[in-house]
Image (tube, rainbow, N blue to C red; front, top):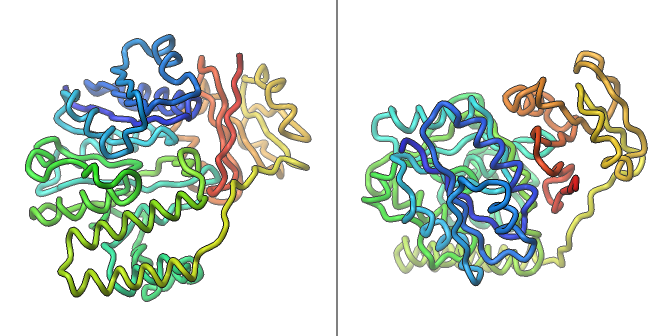
Length: 374
């Protein structure tokens, strides 16, 4: 087997469906398998997968084992030479997946690689490029200063500000949302550490990969990561995230340096503490343009948008806010490329032919929207 795609799912059935459709299409020229580890979802994910994707290897956990442990369960079942850990709220294309696979397979001394992630409106997600946490970078990131000065190489050093995202670059951290690595590398470094229940596990594994002398790479091939689907930034999010960073520095840095970073993290947490709640997507006064021959989807979308227009081609596109492409005419490469080229301008709705849902997210901090078609 050339490629094993491991997806950990927790209550995002419809986003998972679109993700799987994208993988099946993108990996069609490879010998591949998809392994889904379901962390005791309550939305019927497991039954849905059994009914609609019988060829997928499904591991059903009786409790939420966390991201790291679930990834490791999938890894134990895998037979591929290359492993792709992939979030269920991602959409990949032929070129992004095949290019990443080819790079990791052939690049000398490559440990792991990640790719250029964009949100549902095509905006670059800065966690695609990250450096290992230091005292100042941790403080600036967790206090919010890195977000206030995103182009500053000083304040946003954690996100490697100033790096050309249109080129292949070395990076420190590979995001767990799209983490592609040779199984032979993991046999040396070990896989994800279960001590990290959620967050920080990708930082830890990336650190160990580089510690063993391999290089990590950022690849400029865009994939959509809706981002907000698996987790809402509430109090539990902040607790888990800050806790994960504390585990990481204690594990990898000397006592003195670890203490400095932990103090910086603690201070930054106090400064950034706030009550967070789910951000609801806004549809009022929004227009949806359906491009191509999929007008049968209009009745399912009418309650979400004030106006729906049907167009034969993207060249006819007027001023609008949301777009649904007919994927019998426009493939994922075109759609993701369009979103990337028009970053922040349009919200892209995803519906693969013969799928039973439509998914989209018009705010990277929102849970997003999944529409069931049956």
